[in-house]
Amino acid sequence: MRAVLMDAPGEPDVLIAADIPVPALTNPYDALVKVHAAGLNPIDTKVRKLNMYYPDKLPSILGCDGAGVVEAVGSSVTRVRPGSEVFFFNNGLGNGPGTYAEYTVVQEDYLALKPGNLSMLEAAAIPLALITAWEALVNRGDLRDGQSTLIHAGAGGVGHIAVQLAHYFNARVATTISNSRKAELVQSLGAELAINYSAQDFVEATLNWTDGLGVRLTLDTIGGETFCKSFAATRLYGRLVTLLSTTCTAQQINTARLRNLCIGYVQMAAPLYFGLHPARIMQTRILERGAKLFEQGILKVHIGLALPLESASEAHQLIEAGHTTGKIVLQIV
Image 1 (tube, rainbow, N blue to C red):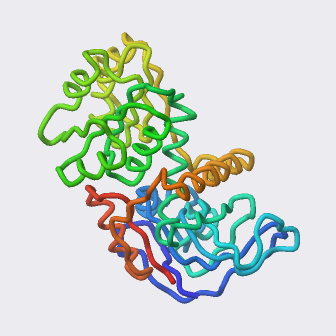
Image 2: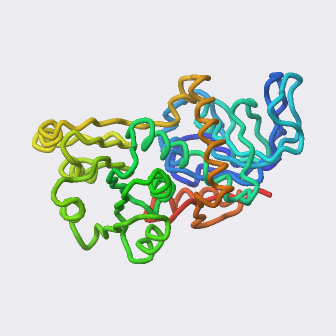
Image 3: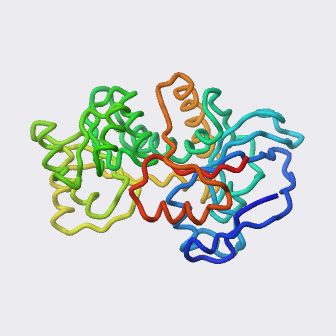
């Protein structure tokens, strides 16, 4: 089968296309999936650079997000059958082969049936972004009806799903973007306010929008100074959820402390990394609930660019350059 391998950490050019054997089914609860498309995420580029999770297992196949058709199943599989169209978040961190390949093996509990109205490309773009947005807004952020929410980078992969989820939960949504084209996108997805951070201070704009109070929940997908400045944009006793680790100044931390903020972190790959089976099943439930929202037209996924499998290195370069809109996907079939 065709696959893209990483045999050493480094720049995007370490990703090399190769022909390797189709993986075998060795566990009775596993399914062999013919991968039609693989979604790309910033975590893929971090693993490629640092090989930080399982450095003793090279070469490896990157890619956590995938969509395809079940081709064969183990003797104990009951949730899917050959011919089932599925999408999933699985491996790609070095522990097991990921989705930059024509075939991959997935434990049945981590497979969700693909939304019937979406293409394979669209379905492959969803898993990490949807699970991350859901865990950030609902699980950590405790998002409630009618509350004000600031979502950074609302036109990005996680951001554009988070804007829609917050809108679905009847929150008032403000989001940061970098140009007018992205402003149009996020407003079409339910954002009430699009703040162009290249032209105005997002803290000032957020405070003006909330009559000086700040938002009840901030979702930070950027990190760095954006995370630290967001303390001042979040109201007293509010919540700030971040996807990244950032060191702030003592003065900035004091702002968070004085405002009694609850700060939460989301690393949706933690259950995969630590082998937490029940937590991974909960993530599959998020995919299943999200699938219904996509089928109902409540959620939509935006594909910024689709590239062939062999262009994985180019896709990594584009992600690292930043400012992408929506998701980048590798088309395999």
